[in-house]
Amino acid sequence: MKTTPFCINTNLGTNDIKTFAPNVASDTEEIISYLKNSPCIVTLSNSKVNHAQRIIDILLGASVALGVKICVLDSENYLITKE
Image (cartoon, rainbow, N blue to C red; front, side):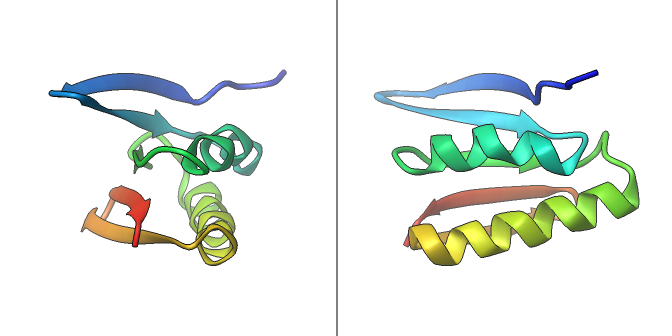
């Protein structure tokens, strides 16, 4: 069964920031695609610890490739934006 990351749009004036809540590593594909053009927030509050670590590992690799920065908001939430 394929899962889809939960996504919320947050309207901050003219800029929209999506919030993704991936459950497994394969959910990062949509996040990485979105990061090519826009910032987002990733929340791992619903992810199991081993999945959350793998998700972060994948997003860290993508951040290097895409030239984006991951900012830790707290232990479960991350802002990913262009440097």
